[in-house]
Length: 164
Image 1: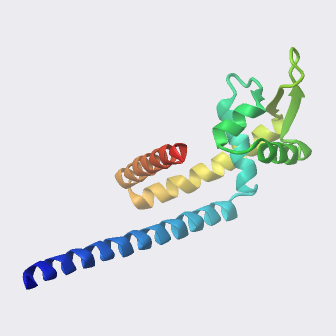
Image 2: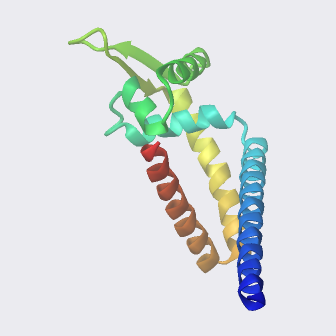
Image 3: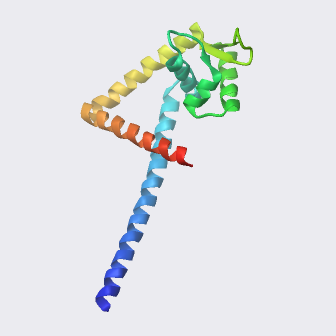
């Protein structure tokens, strides 16, 4: 009887330790992601949200063709109002232009301007140099592993989010 209670007690302690470890991992993950994001923001000359939107427009445009705003929202997992607000900021800064569709005025298309492309090129050059320095310090294999696991983590998060 004592052995059963001891084994059960031991199992409960192990489960509690795993739970505490899991909570600790979550806290550490949140803090590290936030810190990395802050470092990137401080190293860029343009706010991260603006740069992300410009890079997304660039990624989605085929042969520099305009991109539908709804496609941007789906790509970035943002609401239409959030996308619209960011696009108006970028438009006011001269980084993008927006046009209603020729065939259907309900559709709005966006594309980067020369000024927007120059900004992206400047930021990408700066970020590329930064990533190269980090890669040199981490080592090529560790950087590759980090990117692999980061992508895997994101894919799993995306799947979990879709289940909700």
